[in-house]
View 1 (cartoon, helix red, strand yellow):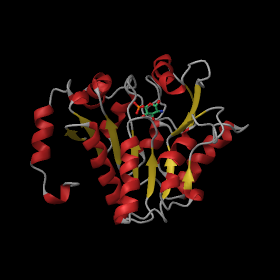
View 2 (cartoon, helix red, strand yellow):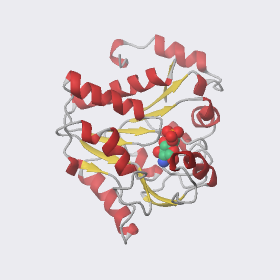
View 3 (cartoon, protein in one colour):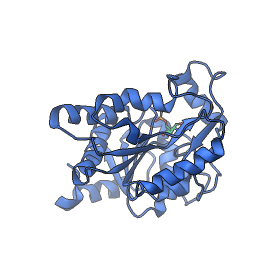
Amino acid sequence: MEVIIQETANSGCLLGAKIIAKKIREKPDAVLGLATGRTPEKLYRELVRMHREDGLDFSQVTTFNLDEYVGLPPENDQSYRYFMNEHLFRHVNIDLAKTHVPAGNVADLHAECRDYEKRIQDAGGIDIQLLGLGRNGHIGFNEPTGSLRSRTWIKILSEQTLNDNAAVFGDSESMPKHAVTMGIGTIMEARQILLLAFGPAKVRAVMEMIEGPLAAVCPGSALQEHPRSTIVLDEPSSAGLRFVDHYKWVDRNKLTWQRYD
Ligand code: GLP
């Protein structure tokens, strides 16, 4: 794992945007795996700025989002499709037909899950997958103790996740308790991973993900096996790590081609 500790969440998001923009410039028809949540909001804002001011071109880009709540139609302002339209898609020159978010409101969710996997395959696989990290270590909506080889499927959200997301929903009653999510096996097939985790609430999950054992109790720890994963943290989220000095040493001693800035 490449662990990069930035001073603030803001600088972490700017770095994350640079990594994604680099991919798009190298490969204009890149397939991006995208994430929702509060963590990547500023990263999307920066990508929009790069599009407007630096001409970052999304016209050939394809995207696949990680997950969607079951039961929410795309026009519901709590749906992840709505989030993506608002934070990125409607501000850049992306072809909406090339943006994929699992449908959470179709009659046959099993068929939707199988089809989502097929659509990823048909697009040639994901070049870079953006991830956030749940306070309990989840990635996508893959909650602790689920299979580390799971595929896109319908998952039951943990009580902790419901509580964490209740603030966004306003009230926890109307919050869906199920979601369609890429599985950990699906995520692991992305050619590159970029995970962002910021703030003191993520300290424990970050410790378990990077320095804990590879274990289903922390789904993020599966990334220890990924050949190319970059974890971007801020000072507060990295506070519990044992090898902070080592990560910073590595970062200072990177060769030019290993740097993103
Ligand atoms: C949510 C999403 C995840 C996200 C995580 C962290 O439940 N399903 O994809 O990464 O929880 O959210 P946040 O970035 O708001 O802390």
